[in-house]
Image (tube, rainbow, N blue to C red; front, side):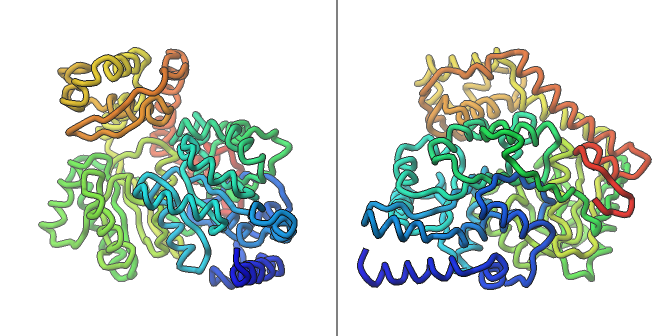
Length: 512
């Protein structure tokens, strides 16, 4: 490090060391005051305490680790460098995030504020990843975002070993728990990851966690309950009006969608209408087109560039109405979403709550409308079945990948489907199985409709061969859908029902 670089670096550290959290909030994020428990959480992190933060969507969870990343006292870094020369380790905050799109949006926002942050994931070219690894190793970044699967890569482990990980932030922490609604197997290795990093101060953040999930998060982190301070801000959003409408058929659904959209036409805000199935989304898009209602459509079968363009149009307010599958919204931080409509029943209480949480982040009144048609439950029950293959199905897929590699590579998913369920062409258990094998590190490579480029790299894990374990997960998923149906049919205060589901006390005056 030359003299000028060192001078600049040390002057930055002095600035950060002299800052208080409120100073960083004002300088970097443009806010004059903290919300709720944010400042208390930040002070807890800065003092080296572990935290579990449960805060409503849009409540400002990310600031609880972003500000400490800027404020950690770097005096020890300077002393270490003075005594050890270029081998000294500088501090960094490592953020584990499950979604590539989400981490890119957060990093873009941080960099726009002049904060040295980056992400490393599979969306980057090999050259870009290597360049960022080198930047991490050299002390270039204060925050690094990765998925937990990145810990499988030796080059990542080498780069991060050259830094002093002051803080490990686990975003979307419900993914840690098999009791959660978006389980990621690599999250269960967090105890191991923390040990590799030197057991740093840890903060886990989520918007939705039942008591079972809360306990499992702490356990998976390798911490004792007494080691972790819980910050639970409740889940109530007083500005959100929850509306359930029982409907029969497309005509009634369309009538409600048009009415809600019309009601908010003069609000200068935006709206999202969620559908489970792409074909249903496209059908309602045609209905709206005939009614001359401007809108865009977002779903997983669109090309990546097209999805990005649509998302940008929505974020910039050029098209205020989007019809979307649940893939849309992760990483969306738009303050003026005035309504979220579910045109089909979601799969669980947790997923529904997260999706309606995108409404009204500016604190203004917003509508969350669930259009309930009993026939839609059949779709969600099929989805639950597809997302829960049994042990025999896992074994059959594994055997074909292992012993029929040439045919699998030559003929792709269609050939595999024929071998697995010839008369059920719309069965998606194969996609679930390939995804789980990838998440557990059993296979490496990629696949699409046209070809499969997968190498089997390990045995099937015990969890995927345990029939009792798989059956218990299926029952939990079914119970989550049942809970949402019970909410829909609940005649009393629906917010009270939601609080009870998440294990929280509730007062009718909206004070948690």
